[in-house]
Image 1 (cartoon, rainbow, N blue to C red):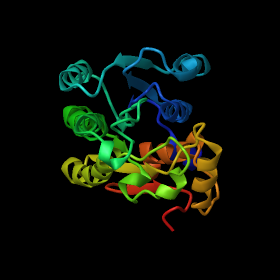
Image 2 (cartoon, rainbow, N blue to C red; image 1 turned 30 degrees about the vertical axis):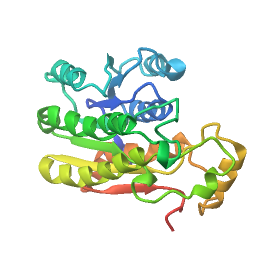
Image 3 (cartoon, rainbow, N blue to C red; image 1 turned 60 degrees about the horizontal axis):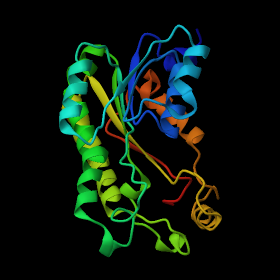
Length: 264
């Protein structure tokens, strides 16, 4: 086996991925499976986008994939999930779940209409669940010998919104989302000290992911980046592979910003 393949090889390791029914989780799962990693997929839904779990098993029949249904907005359900996982080997915890709100009213609406109720729901999933699962699965990760926590934040945990790119659309920007994602970045730094030296804790802050937004928004957003385009889920696969593997064995407490040069 070449040195590069050895660095990225995850054979015998297991990763737990929250928010597993979404598009980004599909790409994370695919890249980790390609690196020989077993998967524990956690989602509110029983059906995954594109049935990707079945496709992975068909392509990589030797891998083990387990699925757990859990509403991460509920503390008691998180406790039950942690209890079910307490005797399992977990090398990698990817806190990918995010609060989904199809009705933007009260969440990503105008500031005056953003509600405390939506704030609480956002914090539960986007931030508190990250702390709770990290704490509850601490022994699993430490005992694994190759522990790595990867938290998913956002550029809005770092930057303030540019309201001009939303002009003429029904899209918005949530103060609750931004605050929770900013909290994840700091929580990552805090957890990296609590888990040291046995487990590495890092964060990824992606820019806007292209997902059928209005053309005017995509154009305006793209102009703000140096690469002149929005992010695709595929663009993040290498970063997850890097932080999950021994290729990043001396990296902890970091927030990797994948914004196409927006911050520059």
